[in-house]
Length: 192
Image 1 (tube, rainbow, N blue to C red):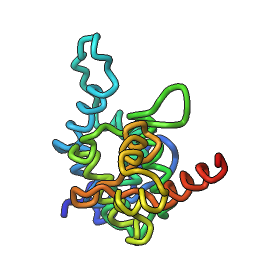
Image 2 (cartoon, one colour):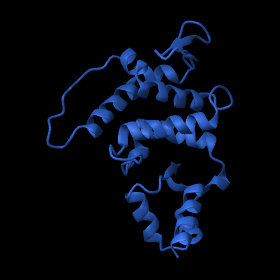
Image 3 (cartoon, rainbow, N blue to C red):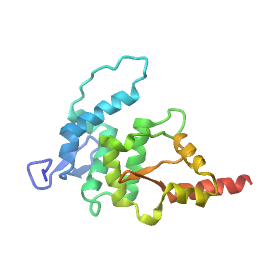
Image 4 (cartoon, helix red, strand yellow):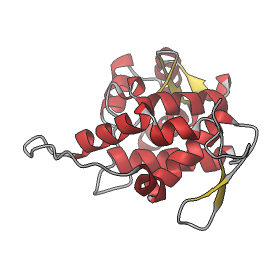
């Protein structure tokens, strides 16, 4: 494990006045190939198809001082030390903010995660965080979800495609938040 600073635990200021302890997983995210790939993915995913992709180089320091960098640091630290530092609620909030920043709809608070997100470096980071925070009873398989909601299997996949359900990919398998399925079930009950 490589520390992000010269000391065993250093403090990094991200321009928000909040000292964040440096942990081993942060250095590769800050400076290594995953960091560059995340930046490339951001540019690719936020640039329209019609416009040319501008090769813009951002310094690692500039990204770390940005709101996106701050949120990514919270997630990376949680992955490294889920028992220390940020709470589960703080990490979930950071993950939601990153997803909105990267994949958000500018007209509402929603976002749509691309189909192969779980195979990207950012998706893998999220996978590790979800693995640390989600208990088995908090997640449902697609089959459990459609049986619980009382809908057809395709309805679950349609809601995922529409961005109304946010899947988690654990070891390549789709899992859905029980709370989202219960909320959907309650909405359906109110309509009936």
